[in-house]
Image (cartoon, rainbow, N blue to C red; front, side, top):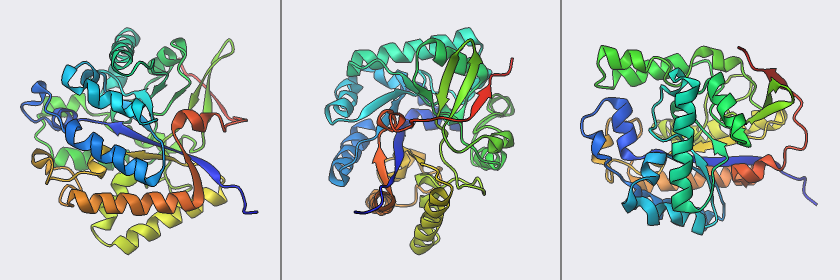
Length: 321
């Protein structure tokens, strides 16, 4: 009998066209232009083909728009999980007060519940935005985990690159100064851990996995970027990341975004985004290659199912005041 594979979770942040435009400072985002009618049928068919189920983190505003209801309901109908990705998708969520964060969470919960019939109890912040106030709101509302932290030292470089390619004013850049987090996130653990609030109140954190020791990202967006240089190099990078996960017994939390699977041939207005020069058909091929490599090495699970495999969480991190 073969050796049992480590479990790995897989999720997709269902950022819509308007969310990219909003963070980028583009006009017209307030009309909520969408590619969900193009993207969701494509990704759901591909996931069926690959025989995997994942967790979709849905933006509440999209769930509040009636034309999206049938599309979003299809996620549940096809056997996938849904999580909360905030209502307004503002990557400066961490600057909100606790009261405003709670309003944001509840409003998204209600919109997603109306459409899918599921009350969300899993959360990821937009742009990896998180705060202690957010964690406490999630714990209060009985969420089973937060998945907002990207443990990498290169967040400031990611933010600067984004600013160079944006149309943001000085004021908008100031409001987004925490986009993608800070270098301090690099010091947080890669493996799931427990936030300890005291009084026996805790919350599970499932970070987006970066390469053990080096703490550099290897989720699908980065693989696409590397594939622009060389598909062989991309495979090598992914396999080395997997090797590092396996020797450190790190079960990956693998992250997807819609623009990992569709290109500017479907969304020309987002041509500014890295990797959008790659056609959708090619992106789907690269996605399939990456998933097949991951499936060779791990048991791929949606995040809710993944949490059931975590029989013992050793590390506890106290909440700071």
